[in-house]
Structure formats: structure tokens, C-alpha cells
Image 1 (tube, rainbow, N blue to C red):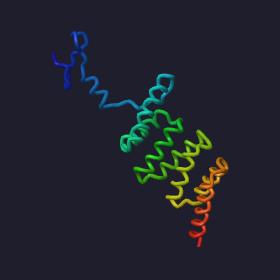
Image 2: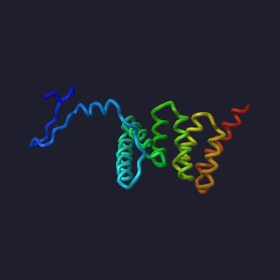
Image 3: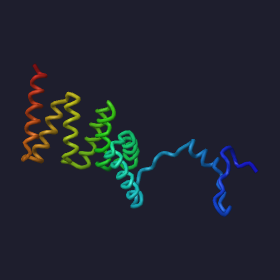
Image 4: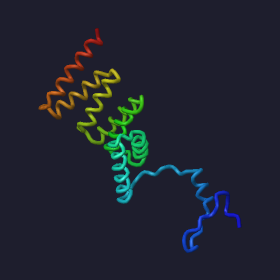
Length: 166
């Protein structure tokens, strides 16, 4: 009895016989990823996010980047996923504009997110977009007026802008 090109898997007690050719066909024609919804999906996404964060903390950046790229398709509304994805894109790839876009979306979803704003300042500075870096710094200063570091960074950015204008 021919069960297809992949073969047959018999599981203990001989009760369940699975024709792997069906699964082989499904793997060759994957269905699109569906957006997460419901409590069980949310819990699964949180577990995946925790795993991806651990990968990032372990400096397994390529695996973390792949995990966050997958997660953003499952939960595009999660600003934490976008923040971590943006930091990894900025670190691992030359696609800094993509990182900026993820940070902008994260900030739209959670305005005033200080780590996202700080990362945005760094990205704008690396892209020589000092006017945008200064705007993000102004927002940081309004959120944390007691932090002198933001004022110093804003002053340095103004100096760079003036030097570039000359």
C-alpha cells in the first residue's frame, strides 16, 4: 500500500497512521500568517516575545531579528515588538530607515516612550537628519527636564546643524 512520496508514520499502539505526503504538500504551499486574536494567541505571542528578548539579551542577534520580524507580522500593534525590532535592524542591517519607521509606529502606539525616543535620536543622528534628531530630543527634554544629558545632546546637535549649514 503506497502512502505517498514521504512515507508513513505509525505512532505507538498502531492506532494513528499519518500520511506525511499531505503535510509535505501543505509545507510546500504555506498559508499566510494570520493576525493574532484572543487570549490564547496573546499568551503565545507573549511567550514568543519573551523568547526573542532572551535571544537578544544573549547576543544571538540574527535569531532575535528573525524572531521579532515574525512577531511583528503576528502582533503589529505591540510597540515593544516594534522597539526591539528597530534596535536589531539598526544594529544588524543598513536598513536604518526601516528601523526609524518601526520606532515611529511604536511611538504612535505608545507616545512618550523614552527608550524609543532615545533610539530615534541615535538613528536620526546616524542618518545626518539632525533637525529630526533635535525634534525627538525636544520631546525627551519635555518628558525628562531634570536630565541634563538631553540638553547637552541637543546643544551638540545644534552645533552639528550649524556646521552643516556653513
